[in-house]
Amino acid sequence: MDYSVLGIVCFGALVLLEQGSAMMADGSFSENEVDAGLRKRPRRRTLKGARIIFNLGRSSLSVRIENLSDSGARVRLFIPWPCPARFDLEITNGDTSKPLLKRCVLKWQRGEICGVEFV
Image 1 (spheres, helix red, strand yellow):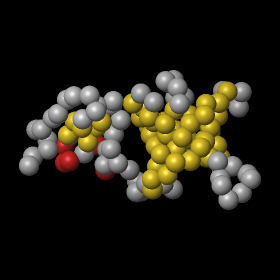
Image 2 (tube, helix red, strand yellow):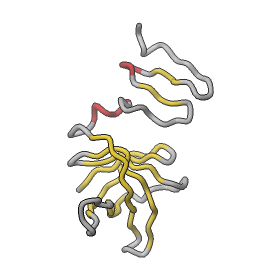
Image 3 (spheres, rainbow, N blue to C red):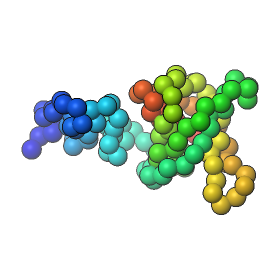
């Protein structure tokens, strides 16, 4: 079956895209999202709490990290908000009391989902 030409558009159903990648009806992407081939390293699925810190540390947004690698992450915002171009990501670390802090650059944003690269 050639998934590049097949599309299903209805609430709660999958929209099938090129090479078998899938986009949910709400606009979110499956684990094999279209730009997965553009990543420098494979990502591990995770559900970690984090905060985006910006505006010289005066502003922050609570987020959830949905997948993670050594070079970046997919982050879900809890509110619809434009993600800053550069920010610090404070990742909750269950093993220690001190959170991990990563400097990030926004690579893409689709609604409440962002792809970030660690710099």
